[in-house]
Amino acid sequence: MPSFLELGVPAELASVLAADGKTEAFPIQQGTLPDSLAGRDLLGRGRTGSGKTLAFALPLVARLTGVKARPQHPRGLVLAPTRELASQIAATIAPLAKAAGLRVTTVFGGVSQRPQEEALRRGVDIVVACPGRLEDLMKQGLVRLDEVRITVLDEADHMADLGFLPGVTRIMTATPKEGQRLLFSATLDNGIDVLARRFLSRPVKHEVDEASVPVGEMTHRVFEVADADAKKTLVNALASGTGRRILFTRTKHQAKKLAKALTSAGIPAVDLHGNLSQGARERNLAAFSADPADGGVRVLVATDVAARGVHVDDVDLVVHVDPPAEHKAYLHRSGRTARAGAAGTVVTVLTPEQRRDVKDLLRKAKISVEIEQVSPASPAVAALIGETAAYVKPVAPAPQPQRQTPKKKPAAQGTSRQAQGQGTPRQGQAHGQRRPIAVGEAIAPARRRRRRSSRPQGTPTAR
Image (cartoon, rainbow, N blue to C red; front, side, top):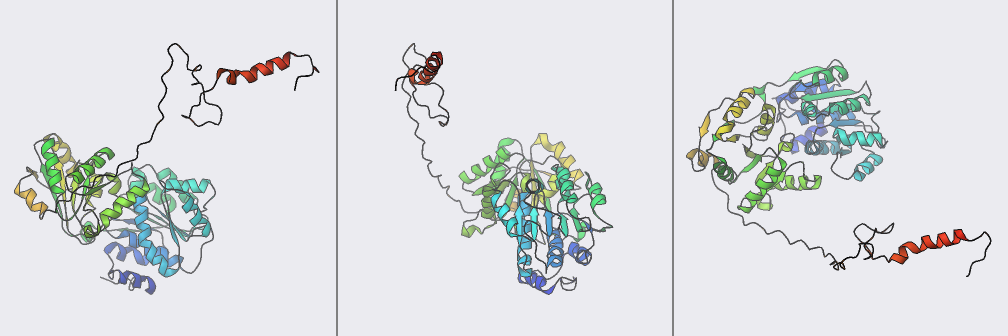
């Protein structure tokens, strides 16, 4: 395999990669770097885990080196469909940018806008953004894209699935026509081909053959159990091993419930889904990424929000607790294991009534695998689990202080709410902080106004 230096990567950036143990380029990097470093528009197709983030991070940094961006006028832009993917792209770019003297920031929703505004005002060279928040900042006049020299669209097919293409189109239109554009997508359906034709100028196309993607052995298994109770026991067993594993559920509620149940059973787990704040998502992902010896957890229970872009090393097992709705989701979920040369196993758990749907799903995903009839005690299950992790006693949550609410006095029988002082709060008084108001106090000013208006003009009043 050629080295990064041989592909034209500047020496200072190649040194950063070498320090991280990266000396040889993956196939998608070998194919795209000579063209992207030369400034050509590029259309790259490759499945998750193929190394495409580095394939666009290197030319992005290399071609922006030497010129500082003006405040609120970034020179490099990366669009990503999810916050997690945006954060991980920025983390990949950051050490390269630091070596080149460039500044990077992320822009996405779910967090306070103020730090993003401040970073843009100070001036950043590269913005890694989700379309929604970026458009908000553009409308507020806080960022302008008229000086963007390189634009990258990553996971363009997922942006289409999420309905982001209208926003992406508006953002791309705001960038200079003569700028370089790099588009990466696993497929060219759902309008991606139209986007490419509109914004890419004579692009070079690179498609990575599945056989050349640096995956270890990804083994697919399908376990059928008798009923919902057996499924629950099997899932707990699959989560009990010593390695890292990701369990996928269909809904946010199921992810939260399963993570809580596993933790209660002595298997520490964290959840990842759209109902969590961005801070909670980052904390849970950090806990899953950390070494268990340092307080990390081995089990992540997630919805499809984690199926795109979340890369954690050494995930040896992915479990489809709930089979996904369509085959693309199956492939993206499964891609969380067997990445960059590591081996991994993918298990789909189903009950008899799900057999037909799962077989159809696997056929569309071009996965050929036999359905195995198992129980939680089957040798096939035990062999997959391997060594069982030690039981971890659940930590009781800290008691939350109870908010004291004042007791209401019982109402006198036959009296109205107004007579008891429970009328409408005065203007400026906080909702829920009612104060007794005397009847005379409420109506006296009106009476005084009526008395004054009845006097002849000029009649003196008593002081």
